[in-house]
Image 1 (spheres, one colour):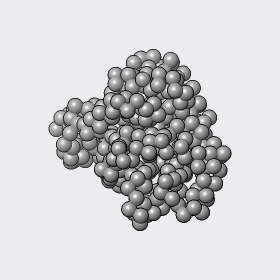
Image 2 (image 1 turned 30 degrees about the vertical axis):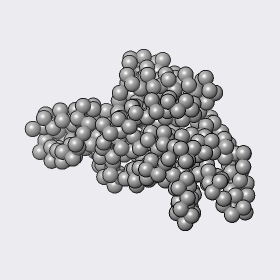
Image 3 (image 1 turned 45 degrees about the horizontal axis):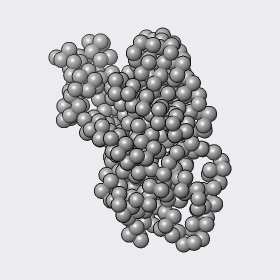
Image 4 (image 1 turned 180 degrees about the vertical axis):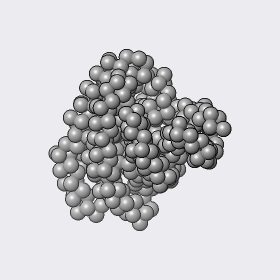
Length: 378
């Protein structure tokens, strides 16, 4: 059972076959012993393993089994891990409302005193990861202020706990949120902190993510070549680790860097690769944005009709996922195109209700851009 004490925390060998084999053996032993609650982290760790492999369907089934068993036994620790893992995996799949529900349940059930053994068993403080992923989920659902508030409070909490894996993981998940929001100043600070912690503690998986975000910040600050070098090396190292999770996100960042550098064809190729990962793994949380961005690149190349089709596809996915932030971005892109085609009334009719849904985030770039476009279309 020693595997479980290393747990899912580090992700350093997340896709290594020997890790998967070890989980299979541990699971068999655990079940032969009657699935004792003392080792409930085994099914949790197995789910995290398959999620990082990009086998999200299998990971979700393992989560369901864990929740079913824990409900039967009224095992609160098992419920915390089951809801945490379910919430994270559902976020990956783009099922944001369900993800939010599970993550909030995990936070409500977690008691840092009575469930302190979970930290040793899983390798992380569960509430730090639950809050970090809840921030990502809330952003996609259209609550950017709440998302950023959670992220801002989470890192000081992780530092107070003096637990390096929780801090590194919290910084990595939080940096992802900042990259989506577009807060380059905060992202630069968090990426540097992530690289420092990950280097000091020998967490190569998280160090690589920090280097990727460092590269993206450099691109945004005008150093396209230096930033692209970090992005390329970071993405290559990440892929070499065998982890499939978040590859579409990192490919999108590299594609955006290529576009800024004028390498539009490579940007398009990277987006196609990202969408291939989405279709193969079911990691759909970024699907709407990937299709929207591909449409934007095609429009830049003069393919307005195909771009419009992709904007509609992005809009449809976002509506299906209840992802109001992605819906807003897709609506802005389509409304701008229609405005340029002298279809201003249609454009405003599309965008106005989407923008009108929001109750917060009016200082973010997304909401400001939407408001400016609505004013222009008036």
